Figure 1: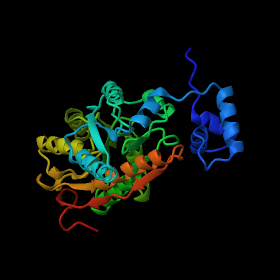
Figure 2 (figure 1 turned 135 degrees about the vertical axis):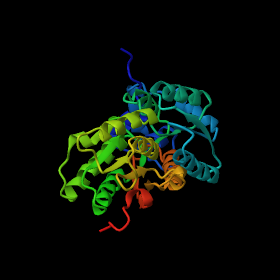
Figure 3 (figure 1 turned 180 degrees about the horizontal axis):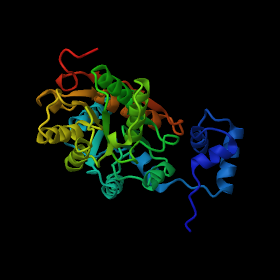
Length: 342
């Protein structure tokens, strides 16, 4: 078994001080007392602490590059988040290198390795749908390299995160359906391991409770975020003896696939089934009927994620901060039956 490298965090915990105090003490910073510097150096020697070569290389080189990894580069959602990151990075004299995991855990790991070789100073990442093992992120944390997660997140006790209010948004959608006389409300979720899947499912369940509707397990479907999987999930819902009269999905891509499948069944939106999406992609405004969807403050999400990144670079050992942004339910034709809104 390989022995874990002693980190600044280990020394800080043992002395009961912050990581930044340890870091500055090892560099004889004038803000740190001589007595504390002596204690820090003595303990570092006793524990055989040595600076992480990767982290030190990054600090010395100051490449002013941030590695950004997203699940895909096609959707407006991620391109808008990236724009926000780039805006803040530019304000700090940095630029970003963007990679896509294509929803692959293995590709996500490869991207991190390649960006490390490119000497990025840290990472801003949205997890792939396959990611359940976080060891590659743990290595970044152990190496004291800045890391921030957005939208799909993990390790919130160790890493700063910025997310949207998925729980409240899903609750709001469910209540919106109820207000438009829907009583058989279905939700097409994503992979269980994604934080957004769990949060939106919980919001859906709370919405049903708020509206006095019983949860029916057959109305909770799952997909792997692909259009094919979403279409199959919709087909299962529409084939039920008592099919739903309203459906919302974990994102707009899922709902576009659902809309197509509904037409195959000879049904109409919103006359027969109400539909709501999530993420409010551009196509939501051009499909017929136009799609009600949850609009995320994507540019702000990118700006906040970059802001958290620079807070980390300027304050070594800063406690992880979780920021939740508010979303807006943009009501269009797909979720409103004319003359039936309560």
